[in-house]
Image (cartoon, rainbow over all chains, first blue to last red; front, side, top):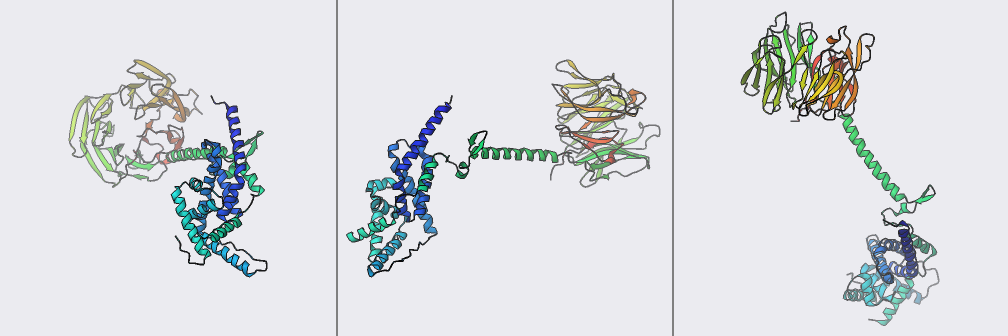
Length: 177
Length: 407
């Protein structure tokens, strides 16, 4: 016999627990997504999608202590899908420079544009690896966990990505991989 | 790696940091666990409706509506298909009296009046009657009588003729017979059996079986009586039918066995007197089932039921006709359904009333008959009745074509 009251109570507890966990990890997740995607609105969409997916799969999470890593894995997948779609239909964001520019400003803008272009040339996996390592400051092992690949793969992707970005900064030709 | 480059990369990454999430994102994500149910149309989940003081998610309602719509569509399609299947397809063969030539002929017509044509020539003193369809519906066998003695039908030259419905060609299957009582096809359609002559015309009778392809004929002597042909696979036998004197010079069968012989319908007398009882003898059980006042029994081809005319006991309308009922009794349970009106001509002598003859289509889905209001066909499952074309009025011995096979 199903105890409907008990099921309802458990269900209610589950909702509350999930909401609390999401609220705790929302900031970090939003900022990671923002750096990966380079757009606040895109990051909002990606985080919301990830939260919806996480809720649907929440019943399968055995240890809520691992919620952060688990949620970030979902978020990474969502961001990766968005980057892939973006590669198929690229959108260029324009940055309007309104202040009076100095030669140093131009140099800074040049570097930023160079990195923008280099980042756009990275594969989604390479881009996310760079962000998780240098923006989210995750260890190589944690990056491997979020992306579900071996540590060696993380190192390889990181190496390639940084090579491309360094060469962009030095003005050298960027080779697509 | 260049440390300056690393710093620039970090600075570039930091510049992309959007900062704290906006309040709307926090609100939206907080609501997810209270609305999303893991469904492809989450939008509907966020549209709860309040009915009877409770909020209901639209999802189960939408699913229920879709299921109900599908079920209704399937049932509707089935009903429409059944509706369109009635009246049955196929041509009705019937004998028509040709007063202008003093003869009779055979005509065909569909239930909707299409395909009407006469398949025999209107030759004086040539009587073509008793059309019988082959099991595949492609060939019509009928009796042709010529040289009839003016005083009756006992003396004459008879033959059995086969008519190809598609080509319109005919051939004489058996020539030089006397008058013929009954003609019938074997279930395989490769033989035709007949019994003749007509009752009372001779001291003896014969049962003949003709191979349709070769024309080979075998004969068996019988005593002169009313005989019914019964096929058992490839072989045929003649079953004697008890009779009583009917209207004019007719004899009417009192006993009508079902095709498998398990049951025998019996009528206690001719005509339409209210004391004429209709019963069914269950041979295996050895008991008689009383179906009340009625007559004209007719067994379904598979023996699962029996149609008959149930006398209503209502007085004659204007002294002219009775409105009786066409009834169908289910074999075994003997539950009776009365399904349609049958209009019977009132005679001054009730025993002289001619009851309509009831016939079944080959597939057992319909019963058809001629009465005082014309021809009718009844769909057994639903009780739906359709009137047949007026061309059939006054005719008798209607024979519905079995569903023709596609080539």
